Structure formats: structure tokens, C-alpha cells
Image (tube, rainbow over all chains, first blue to last red; front, side, top):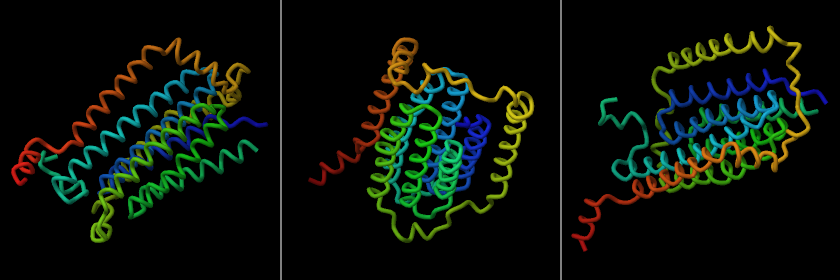
Length: 102
Length: 180
């Protein structure tokens, strides 16, 4: 069995990461922006697990578990903020929220 | 075989990721996100990390994704909202900037991995690391016990925050009770 080269894992994860970055920047829908963040976190996880195998150590996998847990907390809080926003205004487009002049 | 499966799962993950970005309806995007989580779990299995793959399926596909679908359905997107513009007016600049960032990253990473030491690339997978969850548990609960407990604290703070954010505000509750 031929091993999967770590550089191919890095290529895949960087492509996924920049798909996520582009989605986060160009989409106007707040839910899709949160989903693009999940894309980026998953790409990072591929990197961590690939290096964990490459270096024959468990540290990368432990970090991947930590990233997954943080992603769960982040998704829960982000969606709760969305629900609270939706309660005050009918829009979920990010351009409609400019009270902070951002 | 493993390499072919890796390319298959990688391609599926990439296509699903692109679909998440370009699909108009967020619900379709969430279903496509499920395909991406699933194929990334397959990649984890191929990379000798079955425990991370299981956690990926349970937490991401089973928990986070259901939360997304639940919130999307709870919000009930109107058909008028779905017909609005998906993207910003000027998407060329961010795409070019992200491409530059990707090229810069590749410039740093790939020469070292591909050209510099291509002979030493074959990973030396020790037998003890055969993705054994009990060994993984030893590492997680001995060496990383304190970060693990801190993580539970983070989750607790997140839970309290979600409860506070999800509650109707005091002002609104007073108005509601005034109406009654």
C-alpha cells in the first residue's frame, strides 16, 4: 500500500481553506458566512491530522479534537446571535447591519 | 487503493465546499456541507485517525449540522429573500486577494515539502500509532488533561452565552406582560 503524501493533504486543505475564505468574504447571507467558517476549520483539521501521521505523534489528533469542540461552541453562539438579530430585524443580509459603522 | 480513495474523498470535499459557497439556498448549502463533513471523515480514516473520524461524524454531522438546519428552518427564509443577490457587487478583489494568499502559502510550504526533502517524504507510521483509540486516550487524558478540562469550561461558557442570547430581552418581556 502506497502512503498518501502529506503534501497532497496540504494541497487539499489549502484549497478548502481558501474556498472558505472566499465564501466568507463574498457571500451576503450570514448563515452561509458561518458555514464558510466551518469549511475553514475543517481544512485546518485535515492539516493537523496529516501532520499527526507524518510525524508519528498524537498531538495533531488531540488538537483536531480541540478544534472540533471549539467549532461546536462557535457554531452554537453564532447561530444564537443570528436568531437574536432576526428577532429585531427581518433581514439576514450582512449589509443591512451597519449600526456599528463597520 | 488508499491513494485513489483519498483523491475521491478529496474531490468530493472540494466540490461540496464550492457548492456551499455558491448555492443560493442556505438549506441546500447545509446539505452540501454534510457531504463535505462525511468525505473529510473518510480522509481521516485513510490518514489513520479513526477516532477523529468518529468524532467528526458525531459532532459535526450529527450535532453542528443539525443545529444549522434547525436554525435555517426556524428562520423560514422567504422566497423574496432567496431571490436577492447572493454575492457582493465586486467579488474580483477578494478572490484575487485570497488567491494571492494561497499562492504565498504554497510558496512557503511546497518547496520544502516537494523539492527540498522529497526522499524523506514517506511517513514513518509506527505500529503504536495505528489509530488505536486507547493509546489516543492515554495521550489525551494524561498529557493534555488540563487543556481538556479548560475546554469543558469553554463549552460551559458557550452554553451560558447561548441561553442568555436566546432569551427574549427584559424590555420585551415587560411589554408582553403589560399587554396581558
